[in-house]
Image (cartoon, rainbow, N blue to C red; front, side):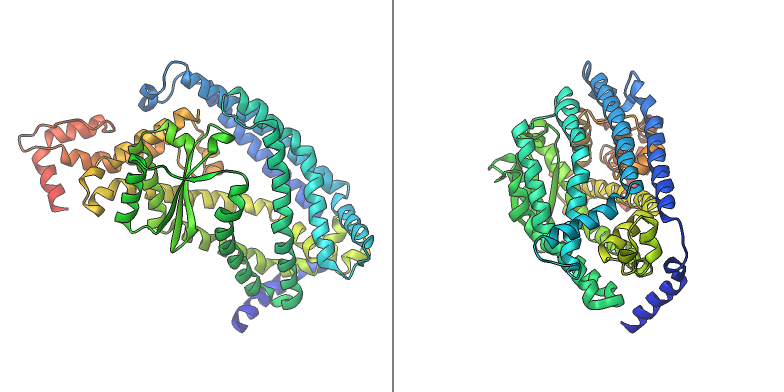
Length: 498
């Protein structure tokens, strides 16, 4: 532990200038936050012309019925225009709040509020909780019209919205209540660790954050999700039999298999799993069940179980913990920096002994440009994991020696195409826009990956010794088909050797 603290102290010595130099931090935050916003706007402008293409990629043309691709393009245009406006609006709002001292005012307003109940400035944790919730509620009000427009205009126009006005309001108040019910105790414990551990808070805070995440894994399915959606056991039938059999073959610790009423709010579809290592829950949206065949839903879940098999959630959690550790290791220099708070308009008496929550919030703003690069890196890792999960689904036939799963790659490809078509997802994507925003490869990229994995395997299975191919794979390229016909015997022997 002492070695860790010595290394952290060395970092603070290199950042000692933060507590003494009168740096114009507010200008830095304004410039770089606008830089990030304008870059994101530029990416949208790169993507926008692709929504005017009249035809889908050749490999997908047969999957779009009359008028469906046009609907997909129109949906993409409307979402892009809304994203451009909302991004600039939110940045202008944040910039105004910074420039006109809203954060300093909120700290004072929180102090005045708790003062009415007989609590003074020495109750810093209580004042910090009030400060955060004043910021949260007052900054949420100007963006409410955006949420209303997105739900009742944008999604409604394209046939996806199922949310009623009463459900929207109910969800809003539930979200606020949940934010206070969970956020206040979390924030109190978070700030208490700073008070208790002093400058040696990093390892203790890391332990607390990990513990909180594990607690949330338990609370989410039992307390939080039932507040918004109804989880019902998946009905007996072909799909349930397929999923339970797949889970048992993989020794996946399936505890519950749920169907969720996603159609209550939207026509979009999804499937996911969560839970502790020894007790997992699989959740399938009712919209996915309605839009796809059981064997295709099984393929989607085979992909999801690929994430579990390769420990992708655990790896991503480890990476995120490293990221959090880096942030916390840098923070002490900003925690004891009166010039930082003075730059953002806080009074001298507040800046002289910087409140932890204020310093941490301002520190997060300073990290904005770095976080943009971190996001790109995390997306790259996530896309790699998606390819790996796709490959897992394709290889199930070999791993489980189960003939019924030999077309899993083909089924997954069909399911992905169907989901994109039903959800009017964009199929023409700019590479830079995708690298910055997307945690998943594009549809065409995933189909190419599946073709490379599954097509080659089926290519081997479709060979016979007289050099003829039985049924050409639907994902096989012309070159692969030609190679099969010309090199049947040699290729077959190669496959048998491997």
